[in-house]
Length: 64
Image (tube, rainbow, N blue to C red; front, top):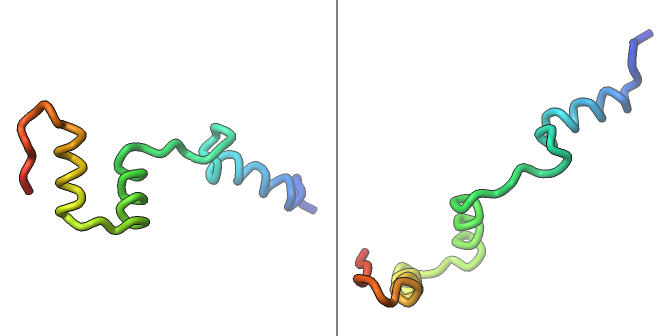
């Protein structure tokens, strides 16, 4: 017989490796969320350029 049950072993693995020990999913960073948005909306380079220039309105326009 084993020392712990299958359920208990799954709980240990889940907490340590799947949830990264913090009780939830790993936090997203800027690059991850930005890539998800690009994948979801699939904007053109022109649309991206227009939005970036609107965001940085007071600064030099950014060209790609």
